[in-house]
Length: 113
Length: 114
Image 1 (cartoon, rainbow over the protein chains, first blue to last red):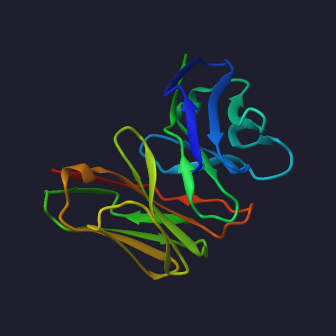
Image 2: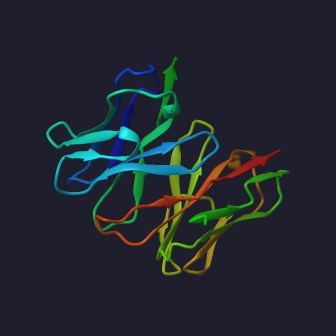
Image 3: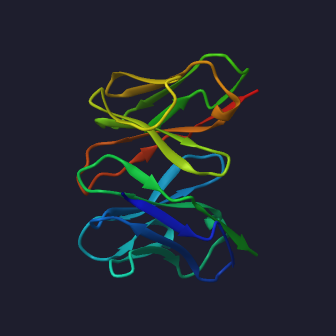
């Protein structure tokens, strides 16, 4: 069975600092991997996804993530945090050919001035 | 134009009542989903329909009944509401299961059961 673990339910960074949000997955075969962002009182918006091909994936708002099969990880990074990045971030997995998404428990990112 | 819309946005009701939440997508997608997000932000899939057929039915009380009158609509009816049903319910849609597929979420319906 697939599962997703997000380390750190709350992460605080200073404005301009590196953002690193951790996601590890468990799956019998390499799944498709996703990062979503949820701003307060809004729905989820896709930041980026990995399916096949290049393991470093670039998304919107300057975020990127790297798929590391050996570490079963898909950590999300951004070189320089902005106040507008404060939100809840969710990592998710889906097996190819299936419709079911499994979401992590989310990481709330706080950006300090 | 809103891609995935839900009504109502907020719903406050008494325990024991029956209520419905509606979802519509104008993306031409074949698949629609209902998710429940609890107070700790945990997001769990409840149901999914593909071309009006139920394809995912997680362990959800049978008080919850989804209905898909056509591919663009997926409604959620909840009977005999309980306090524990208080949550944010998200509708989502996607086209297919290929690697290019992306899931789009609605803005959510905040349900509070008193």
